[in-house]
Image (tube, rainbow, N blue to C red; front, side, top):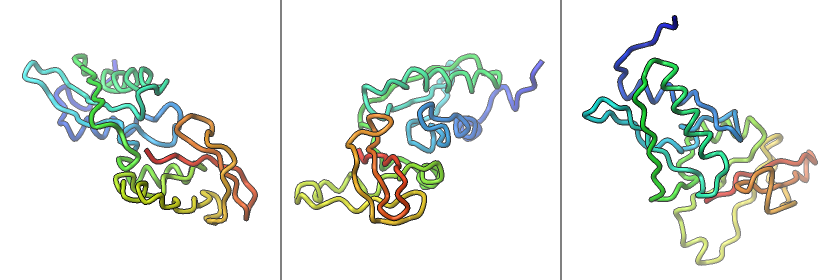
Length: 171
């Protein structure tokens, strides 16, 4: 029989459990670090409710993420788990934590380089900041393809170390 940390965990404890649930497409980063988990609360009925926002509405990993979140909580003895999907406001790369950005870079994926909420840059048609290579740090990089290993990433090549890498596109 497995021992559980507690039968009635605090919300903070549940957040710490979820911080160990990896994103299925980028396992170096947790669903918490990506900002997919929006809220954790306990209902009056005692059920634990976890609110998630998918990175985009067509993300093929959405169901797997929900199943892994539920599994991680049930593995600690909590049976009454409800997953709630919230689409508004839409997920943005601004929700990726600093720790998540560091983990993306360490994994070889350049994290988003600027805040999406600054729509004025888009309206002024300002060129995006150069993407830094996650391997050598050079900003001398070139876009190879607007789509990388997944639709949410673009493929770049470093002009210094010549390595290809994914760039997590800002949303």
